Amino acid sequence: MKYEIKGGAFPIVVCNLTKGEQMITERGSMVWMTPNMNMETAGGGIGKMFSKALSGESMFQNIYTAMGDGMITFGSSFPGKIVAVEIQPGRNFIVQKSAFLAAEKGVELSIHFNKKAGAGFFGGEGFIMQKLSGRGIAFVEIDGDLVEYELAAGEKMIVDTGNVAGFDSTVSIDIQTVSGVKNVIFGGEGLFNTVLTGPGRIWLQTMPVVNVANAIRPYIPTGN
Image (cartoon, rainbow, N blue to C red; front, side, top):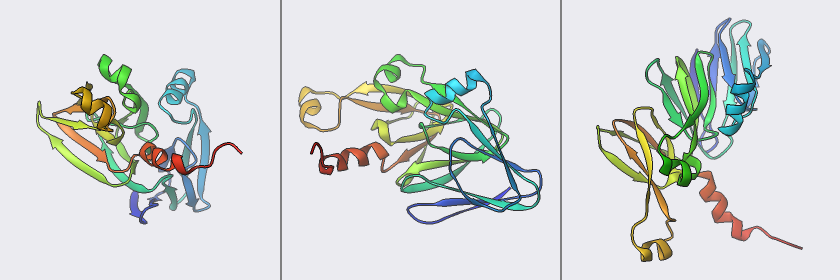
């Protein structure tokens, strides 16, 4: 599979496949394709369908197979970036809910629960995430722009929860409270922050969709 990511604020990824190659996607993200692409929809069993629903994805998976040399294009659903990540055995990658766009058939998408209780009870979007495993190229949607850091063992980064886009499975995640009563009441940063601890790569996004929704909510007419 050869691919090219195009576009600005609303990017697309164009995937050129040879005969027999397959791509998977969890929702209606296909925007155009050549006629020789064959689509099949599968659920993958009750257990897997339930875990997909919890992680914010569709319970069904679309599998596109190239019947000859052809092309299929996937588009983003929110202003930002499409980023390719190479998945290899033993190097899984964790992403935020609904970040997965599409992947080669060898990539497995499953639910990921944060192990620490603090992240579970107070982490919001950080509690249930998606794990990419197996082998192949996966494409992930990022809200806004992407900033990447490589954390050393024990090195920490404190992040607003909504800005966590993804991280290597070697990175641990926990929640810490904002210190100081004045900071909590008047700081406008909420009660909790996410703490990412290395070793491993972390992806941070600059414009979480929830922040955009909160910003425009006061301007949406209500009532009559």
